[in-house]
Image 1 (cartoon, rainbow, N blue to C red):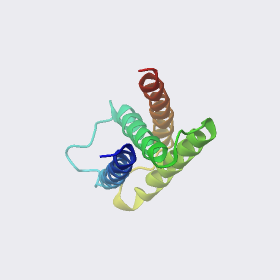
Image 2: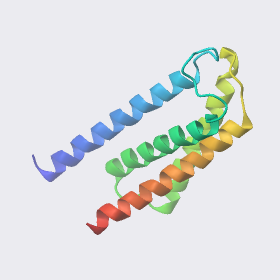
Image 3: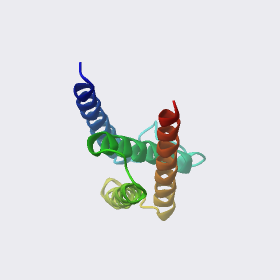
Length: 129
């Protein structure tokens, strides 16, 4: 395979992984509150931050593979998209009996920052090798 073919393949795979993860996240956050495997209150905010860090990292990865190296403004837009999705996600949980929480959204937004920072760090490490 040529380098261009590999890049196209990696781009498609990253987009599929992002789409699958985003769908799974939506489904998981809209399960009824009585679902047995939901995280308890002790680790709820940590789980929010973790899953949104992964979402932001996957979004940045798919975007960079498709468009080239992301600048700071692109990363800021990626954060806006993930943070806005987190807010929308919280609001749309109300009809299924879940709580719409500012603190959950805050954990989502902080997780997105962490995910993007890790993305930049990993990108720098890979560029140095």
